[in-house]
Image 1 (cartoon, helix red, strand yellow):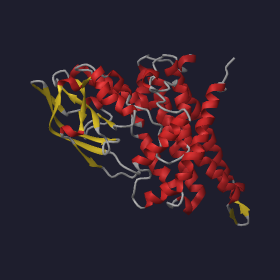
Image 2: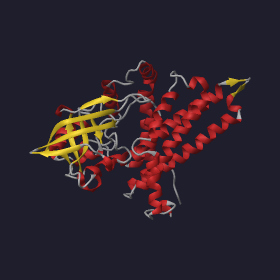
Image 3: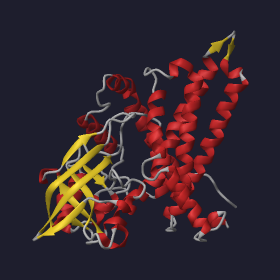
Length: 391
């Protein structure tokens, strides 16, 4: 017997998160839209912090953070369900008490200086691996770190770094042994305070906010600031990227759910030529196709999270979930905008905002093309079988 129902605990946690989002986050939506129309941040850092502390009173702090650091250490399926609930509002909110997953490789001293303040919300980090010539091909990074006594000197540039404009420190993957290359032990991760001399430059995108370019010009970093082991940088980078493979499409499902409900409400209230537009077959089919794709994405993504919880290699299932989930939310939002007509194209509603936002989902943390490469390679080389764990 196959049971697709949620456990009582999963259902209770999901409902608690939904209640918090509905009561505390959604009421801010009109103000967020107003600010963004004025080219201001939807939430100030202090406002985000206040919301996170309110969420802490609800019991939500450090979803993926181990209990020894005050976190919840939730299973991947539970985290997926929570990320879906977060996606139901476009307010740029996230739960506090989190830190980059690879920061837990830090030494005791590094944990006191970087990890613990990040979990507590006192410091902000960013992860920097992408470069102008190294996006999908992360092994092509060129930013160089050369040894100089007890220091390493970093020279080069990182680009499209999420959170890079606000970060107090960066986790920077740099080449330390060009002869070995990034994949074969020639790259190392460094913890680099902004005060050490790197600068960030805002990159304007079609979405709200924007990533940063980070410039390193002779930035000196103590040897003790190496994260993990010398030569472990590429492996840590792949571990960091892999985390997004099920959280991103989980978030996409929440967006699609909210947007589709808006389309249904519009179809049941908007009248043209004396009838509700929901009586038109064209509208009915857009709604039906969206529901089918949304439901398919839900189970693909939950399965990828389940694979993580089972201790299995999640890369194949996660690539399938990321590829389909990212494409699904783009198609659903496009249909929802079409159903709303000209009003959907305005900034009075969040639909055009989602339209810009979700286009990124097909690019960051692994492009559609990279997911297809991984999926096809696994099959062609016999790493997995058609049908996955049921084969």
